Figure 1 (cartoon, helix red, strand yellow):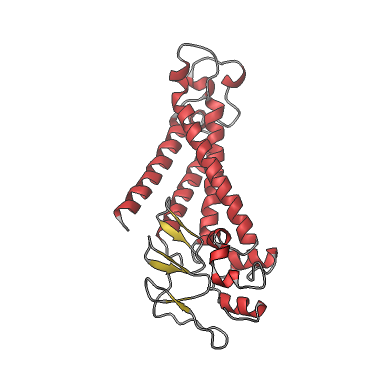
Figure 2 (figure 1 turned 45 degrees about the vertical axis):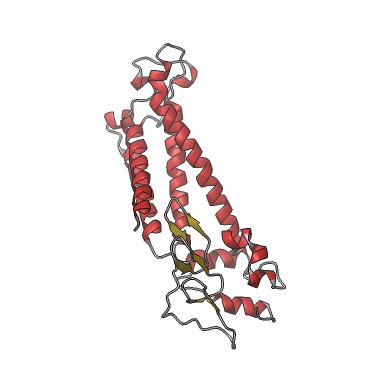
Length: 267
């Protein structure tokens, strides 16, 4: 783990912990002001986690804490695990006498759909992209868990955004900013991250349903096995099969077999 990776992971953990603890300990709605406000000033039922703790209703606060903890653990798991690095000692069995391309950087024989990441300094199987927030590549081994992480993170963000928005104090007064500054900052941060995570999750689920990757989608015209293929996407086996292979298959896929089964001409 490089120094950059340590700082990024520390920042992610600190931000998640600060926002979660703040929403748990901050008095929102009537509890934070001592008097009810009109309209939006009153907390929505179940939104004030601190108030529930004081009443001894610990189920929702506990679930919220567990979801935050789960998202942080998933983040570390995805960011630290092997995304599918191609190892020199691995032998790839492919049909016929097709020769694998040798990487010009690390000199290993690249399986189809692999790509060399200069940041990680490895070739990665079914390379999707290098994520700067993870400080790791997203590839064939950790891509499914990356989707799980995004899903859990989205639930946490939506819940946290609901808590922050419901607790905002909308009654006009000179102390408006003083009452709202923490929840307002939390809500703005959560809103920005929610948009980012939602767009990422939707785009990845679409690409997975088509059995393509971010790299292949963005660089279709530059990739020889796609540019020379008779089919627009030689790996697409239908939505159901694509999703099953992505989420349920426990073994690395020999993409050459699928490619040359559909394409008579080798690349």
